[in-house]
Length: 247
Length: 247
Image 1 (cartoon, rainbow over the protein chains, first blue to last red):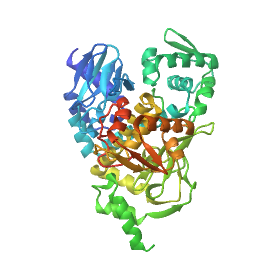
Image 2: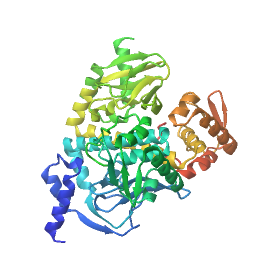
Image 3: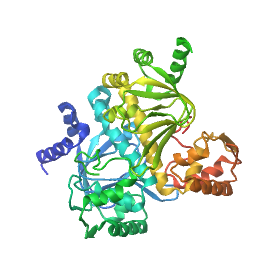
Image 4: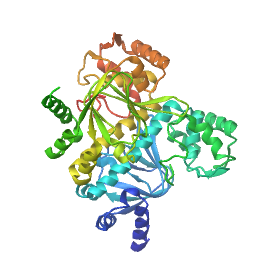
């Protein structure tokens, strides 16, 4: 890749991140000047929980699994991040230690960016600090909702919610989508054992007429899936927090 | 209460909030000048989810339940906040709408403070924005941990974790604590049905020798409770995020 290809690809990705929508050009330039593109093989570890953090990351392509391990060796998947998502940036507020581990769930490319440049910008530019606050508030709201769902929704409803957030929610009629990653990973992302996930999918098919063929989900009525899943949610459907964004 | 009593009580409470530790005196003065002390009876609603927000709150005494309701009328308890805790302040990043409802779980007093003053300070004073970011990162970390625990810990371990966070974790030997609120509320806070909570408590007593008498918990060995509960947690014991603070 030539240097100008690299810069163009990076600029395109940075422009998609809400945190940088109001950023000063000088700041973006300083970030880009110290950026690197890193290729990861499937299952390659990028960093481990509590490693010292000097870089944060932007997914260019692929899927990165963020997770922590318990003392007895079980894995808690915090998120699966994809194209145009940041991760590792909150290490700034965690004594410069990564708050989770990051591993490529498939062959992936990530831009590595300097945390020190981001930190200096937040400390000196109120509008960047406000953008960071908005971004953290957004994550906090999603976590709040996820905690609520783990308490009040059953497994088929939680899977239904996951799918609804990938669909065009404005449509009245049928809908379809490609699963963003394989079923094992979706189960882990939803905090379900594989067998719980399988039962949840069977139940959801029976209740809503949803069909899955080789990673493609088809349903006759988006509203029917919402009626089934969103009854145990405190937010309205369509989901207001999406604003055109996906999970 | 005289005006100087009021100001002294408010200043004492504000000084306990990490968000205000590095605050400018002028800002604290502006907050205090527009503060009100509100008394709430048990079960009195202070505000509802998605009400327009112009004030945030600081608990002076009592217990405030923060919750949301699902479409089918179930309640998700987000937190029970007590003495020297803020709530409602993140409405700033939620289009000035409260992200949950607030109700007094017992007779309580709260200071009501102007959100506009906080917002202006965050927008113009980088160190206040940084303090707000640290405070939100702290909440986010706790939510992350709670999500992890809901996935990987069983109910007795989650109850054990709740109790451990109220104990002096530095001790090797026996420990004791007063339950911060009644068992029904603890069950709701932990997202458990009352019967699940009862079973969890019985199991915890059997596994760790813990005893409960009229709201007082006694145990022979804090370490034994940690050995039982923390095996399904990705953080080390003692909990690093507490730093002398309680749940």
